[in-house]
Image (cartoon, rainbow, N blue to C red; front, side):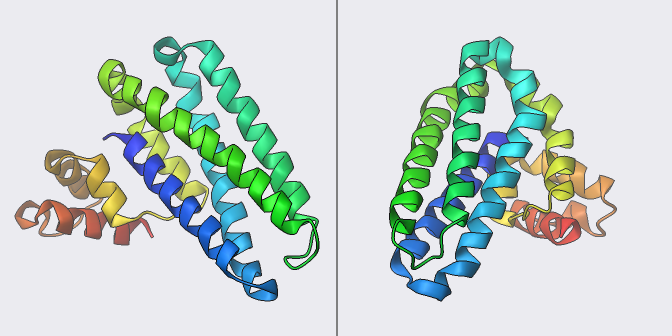
Length: 186
């Protein structure tokens, strides 16, 4: 399983939430802000607990240190943003600062870190797949069938489905297996 595909799906969801918050007004922003903050905090914790400790040998310790610093800056920005009401002066600037930091971080991961892991770290990605999924569940992160399908081969999904005791797995398509696994993990 290529967990970087699931992380990229998280990135797309965060980008969508930033856009929705930008387009909303006042109090209608609050549920989206809460979802964004929760999603980003869980995503960062997942990377720090499961992925970063294992990938230094591929991407280098400096890249891990930079990513961890970017996470800390994002946490600080989120905290400051949450200190402002969604319609209070300065909220827009705080939101844009967080968004810019996240976009920079995502850009580096998706253009440098993840491609290297896919070509040079296949064994590491395979080794972190199970703890990655377990930690996602523990953190209450959504399991989107589309992300599961993008991250896995049909054989990997079939193995996971059998392990999860999903009936009829052997006759399911890849998308059906991903749907069944997502439902089982929810």
